[in-house]
Amino acid sequence: MTTDKTSFPTRRAAAERNREKILAAAQAAFADGDTGISMAEVARRAGVGMATLYRNFPGRRELLEALYADEVDAVCEAAVIKDGQTPGVALAAWLRLQFDFISNKRLIVSELLEHTGQDDLPSRRGQALDAGRPLLAAAQEAHEVRDDLTLEQVFDMIVAIAKIHGSPHYLEPIIQTMLNGLHPPADGHAARL
Image 1 (cartoon, one colour):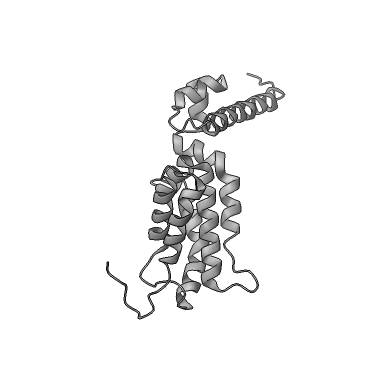
Image 2 (cartoon, rainbow, N blue to C red):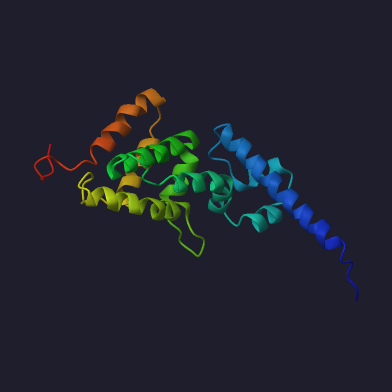
């Protein structure tokens, strides 16, 4: 039995086109605020069958991660202390960048950051946590951030705030209160209200 080797590049090109159609359909749906879109609806909008959809993206999380992979990478690369910054200032700036990113993508990105990987697929939350751990450790060592908080706890607060419905003007004092709460108490004891 002979196989036409010229058909392989054509099949790969068709598979890549299908993947791009799926991503474009999902991006358009999510951009319109349709966060509850089903995988079946994504396939319908992309003009592909369910088998093609699941061959490319076995689940919703994989589809969401593919949509935002480059943007998450850029946010993670920003987890650095710039010249003239203290570790605490650098951490706060990076956490604000995380919040702005999540707020702009709203529920979709918070869904990604909410769940850690439950299988072999590395999670974007895990990637972001790994990027930010050195910042948090440096800020805690400099006594600029409470030492009783983990980055997971901080991310959970950011995700919770990002889920609040409201304008940026409404959310700003809430995120600022959270950032202010990262500072250690002046007397070394957490205030109880």
